[in-house]
Image (cartoon, rainbow, N blue to C red; front, side, top):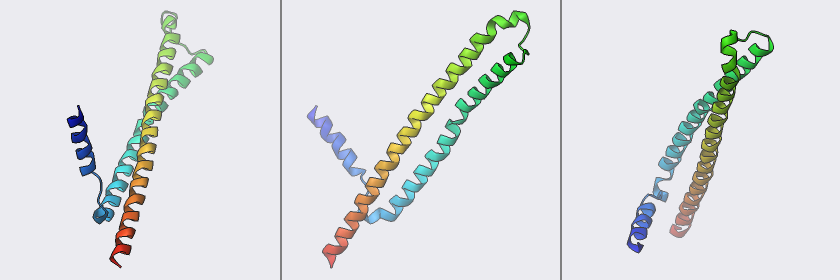
Length: 126
């Protein structure tokens, strides 16, 4: 088991950004975060669409424009299902958003550490 932990540790340490690649890492991080922001926007569309469908269905009921009497028995279960679906999609979006926020913080700390390493290397060279 200890051998496997060492292997994982070595692989993780090998992927750490190096101070020499600070500019490239900064660009890569900006591109990654932009990609996630765009994905977050589209991820938020599904719950919004479901909530709009629920709002339209409730508005139809309030206006008395419900479907035929045979379909009325399925109306509220359908509204409930659409609302449940919207809530699940909203939960997925919130989890993804918190993951992206955590990723932003981690990348910001990594960039700060790299900048400190670069400044320490410059001081040691002087």
